[in-house]
Length: 232
Image (cartoon, rainbow, N blue to C red):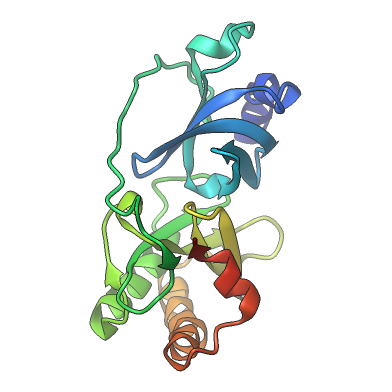
């Protein structure tokens, strides 16, 4: 509860001026995106407008948010993160090797990054990492997509997240910051046990990921998913 309270207090300056704040969203893998904040839900997502295009980024992928555009705010020289620490802003230029890509992001042979997180915001937890590592290993083995180690190298991301608020459950989703879209692929009850999440990750792979791969190969991807994960 203490971590949550600190986070909610920290994001008030951005939230109160969300429609006019120019921010840099720094992802956990080092990628950064700059734009105008449209919506900020500290427990779920941040929506920014980049070049007239809306991008919604899950907070599970965000390391911190830097307020860079509103010179009237006292926080404009610091960044906001979940630990409530103030840090000096450093401009980081991250090359996007796929910046000119056009087409369906989930196509066979494209790059995928496997991400993991937990609702406790505990970066040292192993139970969520265990599930992601199983999925990553299985994806490397089947070779349908090319598994990469950095999100900015990927066309899209497969996310394994463990939620421990209320009844514990694992969630599998597919997303891409390139279009700002996310689709849930499955839920299953779990715990903080490594073996339990290992087994659930295998279930997710067989029941959801393989099913999605088959739809892609047969050209039977749902229209909404194809639209949400296509860069024109």
